[in-house]
Length: 174
Image (cartoon, rainbow, N blue to C red; front, top):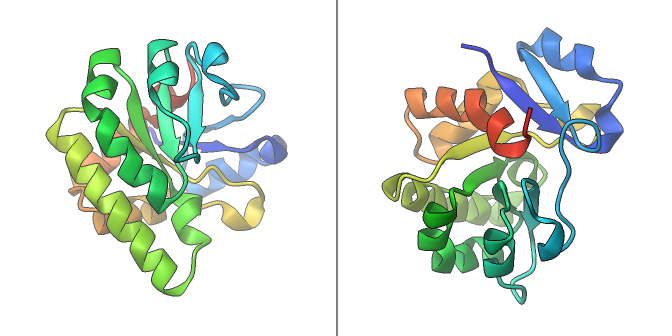
């Protein structure tokens, strides 16, 4: 099975690193996909959701391809929009760097909240992907590490493989 990862714009010259780690390819922000900055530009783009005060509804109605939550507050907020995500065909993408860069009890809280959200999305049949979304070489994770994170979130091995194989299509239109 071919695995894909996604990375931030600063990683454009690191495609070889991803291949050496075992990924078939990597999609890079700015080259292969874009994040929507406002609801009006959401058509076919990934949305990094980090504002509890902002509703997801306008993004979903304007065709957001996937939602990538960034903190426990927005994970809790997403529970309100699960039915809408299903109706609009929007995917849930796990940003592994959010958990990997956290420490101590905050990291445990994030893993717990991401696990709850993942179980809810699986139960409702919403597509789940996982990506490192690395900003630099130190944040890049191997496919096995991403699958281990999926295991910590409650995904079985087959669902974890699927999350790594299908995240490319969830984040970009490639």
